[in-house]
Image 1 (cartoon, rainbow, N blue to C red):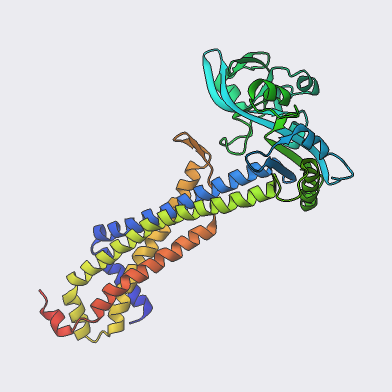
Image 2: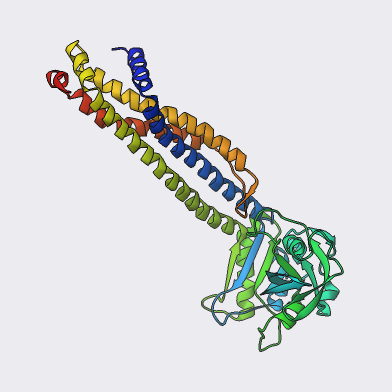
Length: 403
């Protein structure tokens, strides 16, 4: 029997029971649609987070204390600007962090407070939508002023410009001098849900940490490097300066990481997340394959006499085998094509939509669709082999006697 004749016979056989074939097809459609949709959501989230962090600059270093008794100070940040010992470093922006309630009238929200210096704006590539950023006089006089993130400003003041208004951070009243431009997306990797105050104000008004020398303790030192190619040199220079400051002879009491290392670590984590989504969706595809196998086994039982007649008329075992394998493959491949189209449509439908409290950004990739089609065809082939072999092994006399 030729390939064309086998295909025609398979289509006729599937058409004789459209409801059963449609239900078997539906399992594959749902499986492939789930794979493409979830993988598109996962890759979209990965791309969104990565690009958001990259927009803050790839020539950044972050220096944090390492150990229970370790401390970094404003003096450490200033010493890193020495052009003799650290020529690869362009600027530093120390930061003091605290968490408190932010209250304006009857509205309140939780948020992270960052005490910063004027250099912080350029180092972290921040834009101000209205008002001004923190200046040197604010830091020098420990003024109780605040720059709000876009989301915080919206939650507290709605569409009103909050510049000039007062908010309370904990028990202290601060005057709003500016609002940061929105960076979009969720809170991860953005300043939309943070508020910024002068670093000295954060240290003396909002923080309980103190040093024996009286210097201001900082949570992290943001370091801007001259060139991306100078990252490794800047790490060595910063480490050398801090070892001298802290008189370290053995293990460092600080940790230096680069923005690129953060991005690479994040990509590894999100790759695992995307793979996990793919596996979950793949399970539904596997269930669809089992449904096809079940349908084909029923079909073999119902068509036992037909198989006996065909064998009595000269059909070979391979003809029977190819017919049932082709039926199963047509079911799975047809479901794969329909599921791929539905998955692409659904991914585009929910792209950039705000659902269940979260904005979904999708990123469709052709390789995922091709892989889903290949897997669906392979599943049909795999789960169709056993029913096909069972049909091919039927003895024609026994098959003709079957009632």
